[in-house]
Length: 306
Image (cartoon, rainbow, N blue to C red):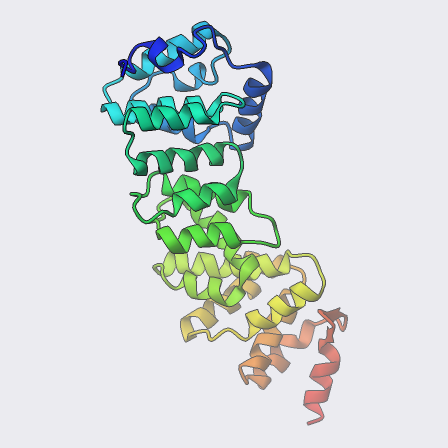
């Protein structure tokens, strides 16, 4: 077996090989879709390969040789270097067996191979295939927040399955506000109740912020049956006294006061929690129009009449 540090040992099947224009364009397009950073870019930088984004994708045979040289001369262990080369071999069109043969010939540990396969599928925007690999129990989570954010950001509006499956399986520690907001948005789409209970796992400041986000999420959703169902779920949440105070302050005095239907939501919450007198008082400014199919002025009048 030849030393992988020699270019010909890895690419000897075609020493003059270069990425074709279609492959280069595909990689660049996907990089833009991933906010200008591929997971392979992250991996190259993490493993000490300098000027990573300028080297990949290689646009000529000389660029590929330079990238290979930078990889094999990096300070990383051999298996890490081989993992990077394995990724590159997967890029070669119609040559999937080349990567498999390389992994076999150099005894690339299965956990490295599975992880790189997962990143490769992420970079190709094939998220379901990526998840199959990245939730493998043998893997130590690497880039977990970045992966979760990517899955949240690319999740269809009516399907939060993939990001929630990754979150529940890997249980990453979330320290980024951007990632937390993306995850909570996905949770709100999936289940108002589950999102509410998730918000309680944080301290008061973030807990309150997430509750306010939950309220605004529903009010800013498109009108219709789905919004109505989520609104009913919202007003029926088992709030503590402190959460009740946050709820009311947000809709009466905070940024939520400008949301369409804010006072109607507050009145509905007061009715749902048995505070009819508060509802009659706070509902005095309601304009009589229907909110999610309910005319609150009519309801208020009927309550006054007993």
